[in-house]
Image (cartoon, rainbow, N blue to C red):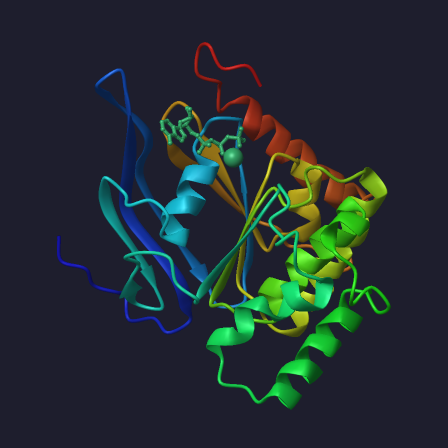
Length: 265
Ligand SMILES: Nc1ncnc2c1ncn2[C@@H]1O[C@H](COP(=O)(O)OP(=O)(O)OP(=O)(O)O)[C@@H](O)[C@H]1O
Ligand SMILES: [Mg+2]
């Protein structure tokens, strides 16, 4: 297939006609079917859908960990052909190097940048400060709480300024209060630097809190079923009727997406 970008320089990610199947007992089972979407520079887009609908699969394709069976995926107009430093992924599970300190974990990805040691140290200090971990610089991950580890995970990707940050339920394992704090932190840091983000979550309230747009994936068809723009000022008040209206709307749409047989939600 010939790959052409739309030529729109405001578009960071452009996916067209993307399908993916996995082999099950020798037969190809489609998971994603003919997905098309685009994400503009600086947008924070949440991807919501029932368990097993293919959210992580789509993220892995964008990250370059998986090649799609069909279709194309362009990052700033260039085809994605494998993992690269222009994309960073944050997972729910802890992904820090357990033998490296907080400072070393945050500095790890900077080896590819031609920064002087002084600039590197300054940047690492800045990010440690920004994520509220001053004083924990020399701690190993095992000495940190779950929320603190996700702060380190956030710092180590934001410091790299990737073209797109891919987040797969990054706060899913945190308690409600820590999760709220992490959402606030992500919003303030990403808005400040106009970081483009694709954020997967099961949680409709989290999506309405964070997103400029919410994409709803349909399990049966393997497609993006709805693309809902969240027109609410930030910071968003969860107790306000318009916020709750978005949550109700998305819950209703989610109920219509229907689970596949045999998959519990
Ligand atoms: N490597 C694989 N080999 C075979 N099948 C796979 C593989 N990875 C995922 N699948 C299947 O693809 C479907 C989508 O999986 P995926 O992990 O993308 O879902 P998800 O939307 O991220 O779910 P969850 O919300 O539970 O994380 C599932 O039916 C899953 O069993
Ligand atoms: Mg998943």
